[in-house]
Amino acid sequence: MASVPYYSFSDYKTRAAQFLKRHGFPKDNSLPIDIEVLLDKAGIEIHPVNRMYEDFGVKGAVLKTIGGYALAIDENHYESESQEFYFRFTLAEELAHILLHEKLIAGITTLDEVQSYHASFSDEEYKRIEQQARTMASQLLLPSQIFDQFVIDWVREHLEEIQKAQFFSPNELADFIAERMYKSLKLSRDVIRTSLKRPPDSAIDRVISVFGQGLIK
Image (cartoon, rainbow, N blue to C red; front, top):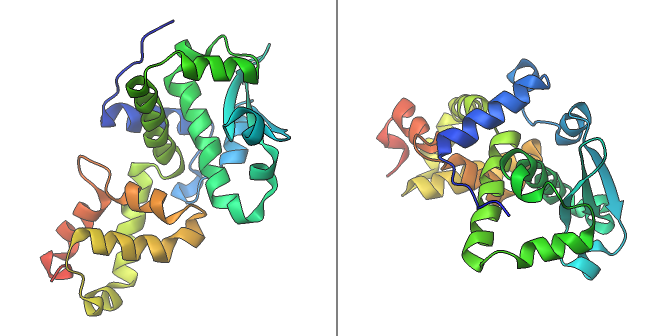
């Protein structure tokens, strides 16, 4: 089996931007990215699987098919309205594995093989694989070149409210923005909060640069 690769933050940003552009996203620089439409354009099918999480311990997995790849998704996760925001991120994570870890997953065709695949890595290696997928997923759903300006524009519209709120750290400001944005972006607060603080030049750093240190008391 191939070794687990390493990626820089620039790699994630570039690979995501290239993939999105290839399939016509983001349209008019708008957010949120419709991950299901993106997958359809890329020819990647979604296959809901009954009791997948109970039987195999995962809510999403990539399976090799004759024509390419398909995403197996736990049926309850797929159908639950209360999990919609998490489901969208699960799809992006699995797509990220295809874009980042194709050499590692190329031979996996069944969910039993998914379990064997997980067991073949050390805890450190598996943690790195999953962290890479989460980082890439955030770039697919909230690409830096669009999201950072989106945040700046949003702060400009709500600047008076933000100045009155008296935040004492960039983290507090990020929490506030994530709370206000998560429903419109159809992602969890945690995903937005993490995306706001992506290095090396985070959206939060750019906001403070544009509007001044006065945003933080």
